[in-house]
Length: 162
Ligand code: ZN
Image: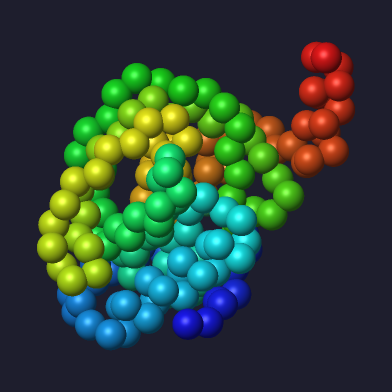
């Protein structure tokens, strides 16, 4: 396994529509293992393959029990409700925005061996499913928010509220 470099906003790889995975081979397994290692190293909750320059429909997401869920060729098949909150992205380091997402989301995907499964999440997991799946179509969360905040600005706002 090896750490991969996370690309940042402005890199053309983040604006591309990714291709489906067709070969569930060792190359895919290595990619998933590297993505997991890279996500853990960066303290993120989700990572999509284009963020490390691989234009394939592959995502890893940390679930509510801190288990890593591998999603190959994921599709959103259901979502419900609404949540509004701060969102960030490893490809937009140090910047956060307020984004409204569904409260719950269900994804159908394949595992690393090509078997189909469904997984549901709520709260931050649902937010993460939406955020990561958008990466596969070349979109970033910043498209959903008018204003980006730095950590310092957020801390200043918290102080005002306290
Ligand atoms: Zn992201």
